[in-house]
Length: 311
Image (cartoon, rainbow, N blue to C red):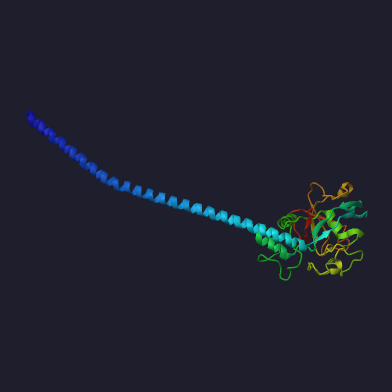
C-alpha cells in the first residue's frame, strides 16, 4: 500500500513537473520573439547612432571648411576694399580751420574758432545707391525704405543713397574699412584754407549744386564739377545732407578742443552737414549745422566716409 502511494506521488509530481515545463516553454516561446525584436531594434538603433555620428562628424568638418573658406573670402574682400578705398578717396591735408561763424542768427555756429585738423582721407563722392546695394546684398542689412524689389529706383545707381539712418551709415563705413568723418573734418574738407562760404567759393547758383528744389530730387554725384571743393571733394553742399560722427550740441563750439575735436561724448541727436536738394542757400553753407535722431532716416540725408592715414 505504501509503495503504491509513493508511486502515485511520484507520478503526480512528474505530471506537475511536465505541466510546469510545458507552460514555461509556452511562455518562453512567447517571450523569445520579443527579446529577439528588442535585440534587432537595439542593433538598428546602434547602427543609426553610428551613422548619425559619422554624419555629424562629416557635417562639422564641412562647416569648418566652409568657415575657413568664408574667412579667406572675407580677407580677400577686405584686401580688395583697401585698394578700392585708395581710388575712391582723396587726401585732405593737415591745417587750421576757422570753424563756425559769429552770425547772431546761428547760435549753434557760434563762436567762430580756430581748430587744427590732422591729415586724413575722405570719399571723393557721397556713397551711391550702387555702393550701398553691395553692402545690403552681402550683409543682409536693412534696405532703404523707398527701394522696391530689393534695389534702388531705376536710373539712380550713381545718386547718393538716402533714407539711411546714422546707424546704417556707421555700419556701412565699418564694413568698407572706413568711418564717418568728424564734424570738424567735414567742414575743413568743405571750406579749405580759404574758409569758403560754400565748398566752391562765395557765389551760389544752380551751376554749383543741387539745392532749393531746382531738381526736386537727388542728382548724380558727378553732376556739378563747378561745385568741387578746393581739396577735390564733390557735392559737399547741396544734393543730400551728410551724416558725420559727432553728437549734436548747440553750444559745443564754446568748449571745443583746439585740435581734432571729436564732438560731445553723448547726446540725443547726430550732426549732418551740407544741407540737401530741398534746402535754401543759407542751409547749404559749409558752416551750417543740422541734426537728426541717429535712428531716423530721411530722403534728403546720405553720407560719405573718411579714413585715418596709416603711419
